[in-house]
Amino acid sequence: MKIIGLVLSGIVVLMLILWLGLQVQPQGFPELAAGGKEVSRVALPDDLPAPVERFYEKVFGGEIPRIDTAVISGRGTMRIQGITMPVRWRFTHQVGKNYRHEIETTWFGIPILKVNELYMDGTGRLELPFGISEGPRIDQGANLGLWSETVWMASGWITDPRVRWEAVDADTALLIVPFEEGTQRFIVRFDPQTDLIRLMESMRYKGEESQEKILWLNQVQEWGELNQVFTPVQIALIWFDEGTPWAELSVESVQYNLEVEDVFQEKGN
Image 1 (cartoon, rainbow, N blue to C red):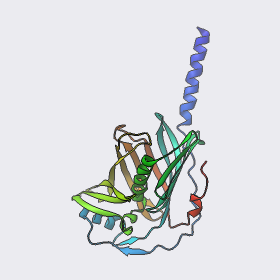
Image 2 (image 1 turned 120 degrees about the vertical axis):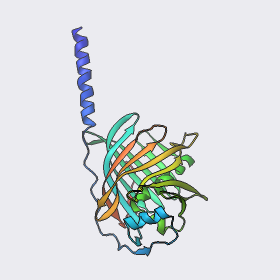
Image 3 (image 1 turned 180 degrees about the vertical axis):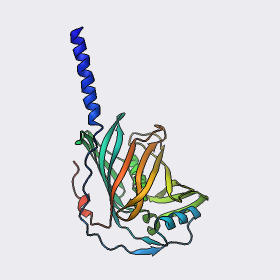
Image 4 (image 1 turned 60 degrees about the vertical axis):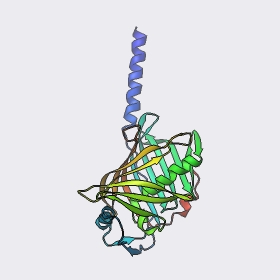
């Protein structure tokens, strides 16, 4: 009985150590060196649905900045195999074209699992320590990821001629984006009190083995100012069949129009 008691005590201590390690937030990725090109501006179109027009006037005013690249960094949590883990992350975008996601899950602030996800020229590739995922369903989801993350550089939904908005009602609009030879769409819901985007909904494959698309929700939980830019600062990502966020991301840095070509040439971890 004494041995059993010692074993049980050891298990409890081990579980406590494991739990404590998951409570420690890592240091964030450092900002990249500044030196981006000057931002030009274009006039706000006069044919936007009412809630879309109110949103852009709230965020940008009457002129929309032309953003070619964006680097968004922060920390948060992600649920992996049922375990919620702290992460640090950096998303690098060539707006409307390509992205690279760098994500590190940590324990006691130490990286233990690194994810490198690329979407380039319409092809997605998810690199994990235990395998690689790619294929047409990965491409479908990655393109939705590309355009949903444009919420951090929302002028890209205006300055790209391939994108269009369609009216639904006073607080809702459809966002139509290009994908392969056709299009994909989001239902975008705006907060009637603030005029800001609060939710984007789309139908997405979870992975290459998925047989059916599942409702995918991108929820903006909070807007704020970073580097003199008004932007989402707290995001939750939710699969409808799971019901609760699998990722909650706090944004700590946004940088625009940097030279990012080298980021897309680097090999994953």
